[in-house]
Amino acid sequence: MKKLILFLILLFASNICFGQSMNVFSKPDLPQYILVGSIPGSLEWAGNVERVKVELFGGNYGEGSQSRIVYVVDSRYGCRISKEITAGITTGTHKLRIFQRDNMYDVVIEVFGWGGYNIRSTVLSYEAYPSDFKCVTYDISEKKEVTSNFITTILTVSDKNGNFGIGTENPQSRLDVAGTIRSKEVKIEATGWSDFVFNKNYDLPKLSEVEKHINEKQHLPGIPSEKEVLENGISVGEMQAKLLQKIEELTLYVIEQDKVIKSLKEENKEIKNQLKNVQP
Image (tube, rainbow, N blue to C red; front, side, top):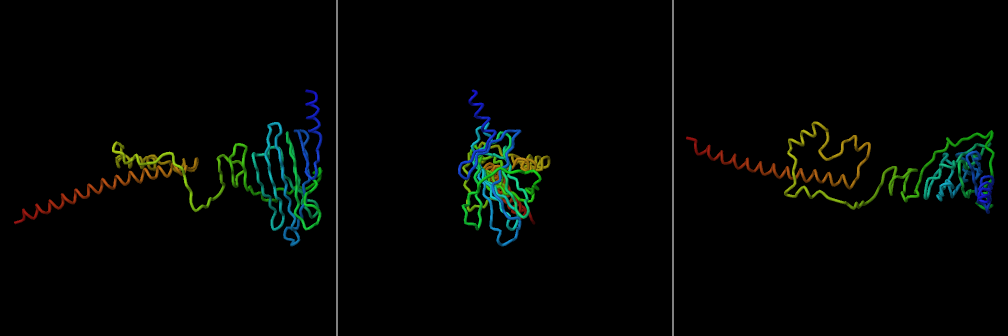
């Protein structure tokens, strides 16, 4: 037990470098600040080609997190940060922060709480030296933070449960998209269909009942209201089945109306013939 405690203390108190990457551990009262690269502050300067790519592996080591996160920071033609997360949300124990230093932006990873990460940084540059950036500790005192000047774009995120998100940092489904999906074809495996409407035992609602429901609820029976849709969204497969049910019910109404119309035409024809026969 004593050896385990000593080992944890050493982890909390030290940053261990392996090659160009760095292992960083923190605890609530000992945040760590790591410089992972710098980029020019001249936004539209033609020579501004530098950008920083930062990869972090880890998270809250008290929970055994093994996620990976990748940031790309770019200042040319606008200050931008893109983010990709694999196997879990790790932002609870780290932040990417940017500080202005003269005409440069310093990209810094802050590790806090019970955070443990392996950090590797790559800097794209015209220079001939290796692109791997040697991460070093950073003093943020008396530095001007400009992180808010950068627009962050969430690219893709997957969590430890296998949910995958595009444009969202907290996917709640196997595929969660914050935006428009464009596709040539979408196939949905339905769990049921609406042909039960054509069963002879189906209780087709009377039109007077449908009218009453519409007047009271302002939506069709069996169809969610506008409020429900805005709050909860809709299931495409389920809604397709419900709409088909209404189409099939409408078809039965039309068939019934057609029978009535034909019957009325026959009655009208018969009445006309009778009138002809009674005329003097």
